[in-house]
Amino acid sequence: QVQLVESVVGLVQPGGSLRLSCAASGVIFRILSMGWYRQAPGKQRELVADITTGGNINYADSVKGRFTISRDNAKNTEYLQMNSLKPEDTAVYYCNIAFYDSHYLRGDYWGQGTQVTVSS
Image (tube, rainbow, N blue to C red):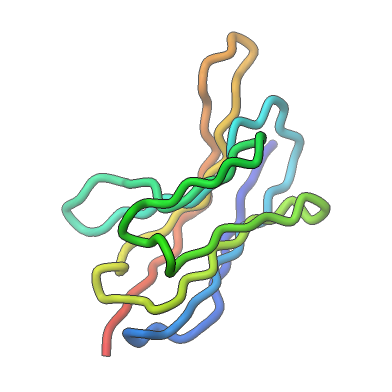
């Protein structure tokens, strides 16, 4: 059974930094990408950043230059380093692993979600 467990370390004042971690357990075949999404109150869940198995990295325009996604394959862990945080970054952040099922249709595993609040 696959589980994604998130954790967060850091202060949350505007201009500050946080690092999110997501450790994956279990075996996942045909991984498409690993990434982070967020959902603010009253808004749809949106992609923050992801890394495809081919090594392509995508960032939402709103976080480019401030957030950095990375992964440690040996530890089955992905990270999201968030710098220069703004109040509009406040949201629940979810780690994600996208994969192809046996019919090559997309499936998703999700972390439990971590509340990030940026406020003075």
